[in-house]
Length: 410
Length: 127
Image 1 (cartoon, rainbow over the protein chains, first blue to last red):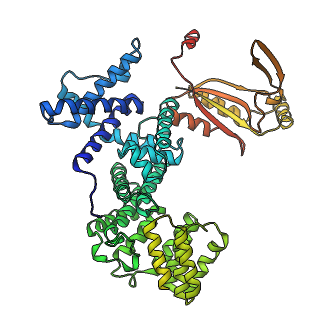
Image 2: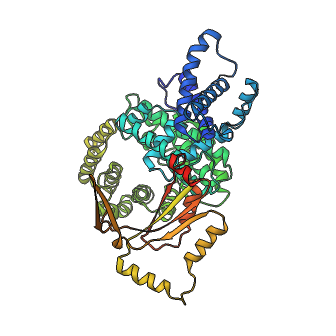
Image 3: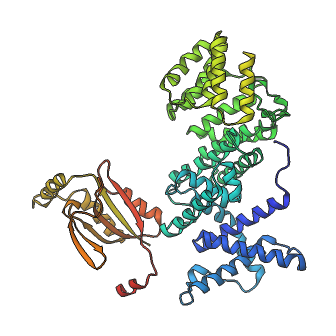
């Protein structure tokens, strides 16, 4: 795991509690904005009360119950006549009992919130922002920084999404038609992970957080649906990729290519967990894109060195992936694997149609793959041109430096 | 919650006229829309449904100061025409989307799903 000044324990605890309070209230109120407002009031009340009385034994319960009361008050203020007892639920006479009831349903509450934030009736980028804000508890500022969107724009998107959820009747529940909705959740989680992992731009600190948040979400989903192979596949994929985090950057923050990574710095615990989760999923014999990608990552994780990697098997897995989910990006990866299994020319043959289509002309990894295969096939001059195109097309300064170094070296 | 499932189509006025004329023939067998409507009714979710004339036959009343101008044609000239709607009462958006998905519409048509607001004063008149 990448070391560095992450957010403090207190901040993390705060975010955890905040997310839990918002989830519980959102589900009960059917209104995320009202839940958020009530949570803010409860945290403000804690800031006043706790220094005087000390932190209560169950801070989460205290915050939830306080927020709940604030929400009930606000509801009464806004609609003095019709307080729907069904909406407001039963309020237990003693605070202790109340806290117990509230925390019992917490797992469901958080999942309900995940499914609402990832509802396909919201645009994909909105789903990502909503999930990071309300499930992972990132601030609007952090999310805006991570996705290079002006903060007011992002805030506006969140406001609009909250209104849509409330008015269109999107529920904070685990849906009955799970398959399709789950697919949307997985897409969002993986997007979050990739945004952190690929580090195309933006603040590195927040980037690392995104990976952790995505894995946290992945674990949550896997816990709910242990029998769903693709959900397990997604978790395994993220764990296996993240296991390389410490080796992916050198001391100066430059990315280290897979071939040159110090494999002793890979996180064995994450690898073991990833492989264990993947094996259980694969045993169900319902392959999918996440399981296939995780299987590829597992082969990397198990290889003693770059040279000893089972490239023919990886090339085959990319082939399966391309059949299941055809995309030029998969072809780029397959080309590299074929190049390593059968030589540079074989790899270039796979890459040729992708280059010719021009579909990925602005995609830096395409040019890096091209350069790599050209070098391998013995065309150093043409490789130089491809390295420089790779450097031009990346938005990540550290990566650009690394690619320019390759350009100089070749 | 009440939802309107609004049926939009690019069907031209001529195509639509031919279609509806054919549908009105006494010997026309009940089709997929009959089954759909029956299913919604049997499920107890159907509040209302109407099939509209083509928007080419619409008349608009435009408010200009004190004037009320009657004009020939729809409010907006678009390629997508609102040809009908179902008003259903279901628990949430997922259920509404499910009914929208089950509609026997043609390729290229679109169903817009809109929830109805509640708690507005004028609605009390309807009881």
